Image 1 (cartoon, each protein chain N blue to C red):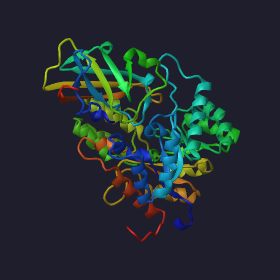
Image 2: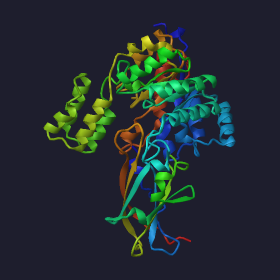
Image 3: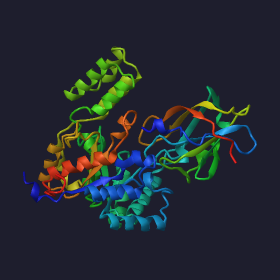
Image 4: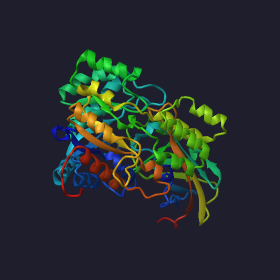
Length: 335
Length: 131
């Protein structure tokens, strides 16, 4: 593997530390310190999550933000935008308002020093098209997340690709979420369902159907025919929301791919992800000449918080140990 | 996703303004903050009795709202993990000791076809009389 020739960088979305931030056991500064220690130096943040007072950013926060970056050896890379089309109870946000919301979030990214904005999956293609010139002017790339259960042949993604190719805007692109490469069902999810009272034989059926890459479309019906309850339906629904697809599908779209959300549910003690085969994903990124960040996105907390204290820092640390290995980094420090 | 953290174990107290009732601190079961217009309901049940929304108020970082004001409040937010104060009136004074408190939060999340939110129930101990 020509791992040494690549330009791939390591980063972390502070989303990964949501459990600790929610409980106020870690501050934004703590998140950045930890990121620096782990070597996840490219920072992605959800401003709506960790900047109190959003969408107003105080000068004081922005000043602190950059001083923390300097102190911990990190750098802002990306922000994640949301598009609240249902902001008002009685009406849909107009197209103009949607574009204005995206442009506002581009401004926030610029203030935070990030050149990439994650456009959430519900952002309509026409809104991306209209916001693109402003993003370009501001030197920001708007990257549509390709999030499970979507994939590159899905009509919603095809509509976006049509806009990207027709306009040729350098400001538009894609941000694949590695939750689209869930090869086997995350056991933290099935184990939680069992603790919540799902029937073991139905959990087995769901997990086996998923792991065999079988047809999950009718799983909820079959679970119903077999006497399932709400917990079983919930798990069956989850099985339709994860997808496995061939990572090589990214190669064709590589010129549009500017950032990777490295979703994960469980890093084992052996420093591998239980359900997402990063050892087959990273070589595809290397082969395609991807030169952006692999940005950790830990999402296992919600499945284990009922029985274990969540340790997001250790989970992210393990993922970065894996990345360092797969990227051929020879730090020699902590193996 | 943060359902078990909705009802805060600390801060359950009686109203300190002469009315009968109490205050329970609550957190939003979601991973980001939301404008209050998207908080559709924070339903409260105390000792098995539902408290009508009209008898509750909602306070975030010092700003107090009635629930019929929330749909129009697009310029203030319930931040991620923020402890909001859900104040409620009761007919009878709350007795000292333990109470069963159940809270269901309903959120309007734009990328989801169905309502978001969650529910939590805890047995809380009434703190000593405020100030």
